[in-house]
Amino acid sequence: MNAPAPYLHFPGTAREALEFYQGVFGGELSAHTAAEMGREDLPGDAIAHAQLRGPVALYASDSAGDAPLRLEGLMLALLGAADPTTLRTWFAHLAADGEVVEDLQRRPWGASDGQVRDRFGVLWLIGYEHSGDTDPAARAE
Image (cartoon, one colour):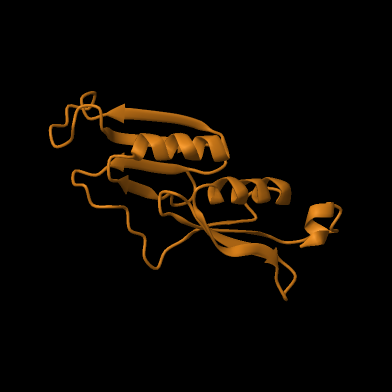
């Protein structure tokens, strides 16, 4: 790993969240339950440690309490992390059952970006630079 990767603590929804992110971004998911890791502070089937490896890297676990995941003053940026078509697809998938905070749109400085809060409460900034605008969808923004 050559960059920091977020480690998210979910209130009992880590498996569901990571399977959702794997469906959005692809990649390989590995998950280990509390029982497998010998942890007694979580229910046996809770996720004690999981990792999504692929175009987007995430770590996650279930928290020992039922506190909801809260990310204040933080967003995960996927700026130029893939081609524009892929980024628009990710944006749409993350918005499903979530909330578009700011539409993915062309900005005065020439790039496109937007913000979406997914159904698990994670805020994402997705954007890209335009190069040649050969993609009709990119020209329409």
